Amino acid sequence: MVGIEPIDPSPAEQQIAQILMAALDSGDIATIKQTLDQWPSQPDAEHNSEDYEENLWPFKLVLSGAIETHNSDIVSSVLDSGLKIELYAVLGALKTQSIGVFQAFVDHRWDINWPLGETMPPALSYA
Image 1 (cartoon, one colour):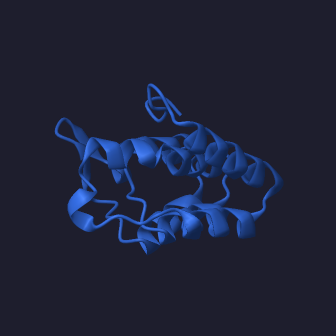
Image 2: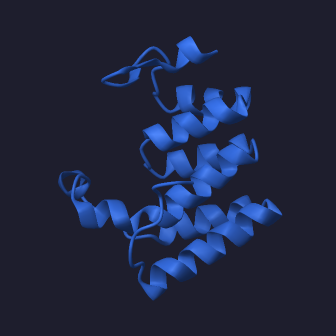
C-alpha cells in the first residue's frame, strides 16, 4: 500500500479509513457501500486536483486491502463508486494473481492491454 497514505490526513479521513478497514477485515460489504455512498461526490472537473486525490486515500486503502485479500466483491464495490484503477492497484493485483480481482478490473473498463506506464509493458505481459 505504498504511496496511498497522504502526509497529513484529516481526523474525518482517518475515521473513514478505520471504518473501511474494519469492514474489510470482517467482510462487511454493506458498511463499505454505505460509507462510499455517504462520501461527498465531486464534479469530474475536480477529479484531477491534488485535494480530491488525497481525499480518496481511505478508499484507495480499502481497495488495496481488498486486492491483497483477493476480495473481488469489495474491489467491485469500491470501483462502482467511481474510484479509478491506478498503477498501485494493478501492481497489487499482479502480485496476488487473483483472477477475480482482474475480472473486476475488466468489468470496470480496465484494458489489460494498456501499458502500465511509459516504460512498462501491459499487465498481460506479466502473466
